[in-house]
Image 1: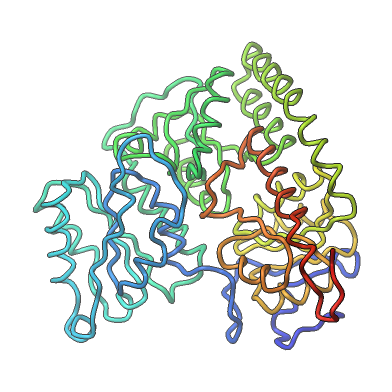
Image 2 (image 1 turned 90 degrees about the vertical axis):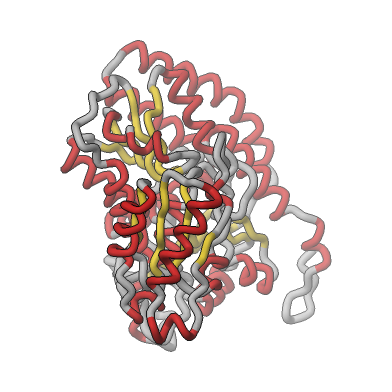
Length: 452
């Protein structure tokens, strides 16, 4: 392609709409020699499971792995807070040589004695995969000894990328939710998959669904606990927000428990309204449909003027987006369209072929689309495309600031909700506060020209 990169093996993962037929390569291991923005297997598993509030999350590995993902999700709890701790076996050189299984058993004993958890998730890390500790056997012995549920999470590195970590987390959840006997199905109930209750977002959506007559049976995994997850197979429908992490689980639950699933998104006014209608349509209840339309009309009337006021400040502005999943990326294109900003660069860590097809349909000609990007590519294309703003996560923040462009955290660290109608307002407000900040009056380009 025209913007050929130094590492030519990356070219199939990069496309520019309108310049060539888009058949972007994705869902593949990162190219050797590239410092990928994508997180590791263990991180993928930890971020999915960590919001289970009454579980002990024990990381079998070096202390750095435990620290890396400690509390990185701003997930809120309505009850237990054991999940806010990060337990580690802190493997040392001696354990690498002679094995870490005895240390893991002692760590479980200590945590049980001090906290009495009902549930353990024990995560394997790269070093555990190298030395060959038998996590399954240790967890089984300790579970029998203490009479509690201890689930090994097979998240060692070298078995794939962040997507493999998502699957490891889903496998752990399947072990937890599979009942000994089938549970009676609850009418008009949903399991909400792929919401991690960042800043209380799962509570916002629960209120919407309750208002239209749908009960939330379980949430995976925001503000969830041992008892609520064990009831998951009683739900009559799965709705899925984060497709990247939860498609595997939704498919398994459909095959094994005959619970169908819908993909939804509550990011932005357009997708929130579409999702509420889709859920009400599924249950086929005219009264529920009517309540959904009333909710949408009320919230749209309240929200639209606020969005319109912010929109007036964004004329000619361009955005770059680099997020974890493709479904979120799709919603962000629509949300930026709602506030009058064009997306000129968009990429994901774990996007799927059908999601990239949809992205290609939504964006304008000339938009650069990336899969599993590295910092050099993001810098090159953001500069080339003239982006004024980057939406990303914790790893993208320093890059944006070094380039002197505005940044929005759409990942784990944020403290305000971005879901639903209140989230649409928060998003527009944050775009305004960062894009229109007076600080840009004091920024100079490399050529010495003042941007203000």
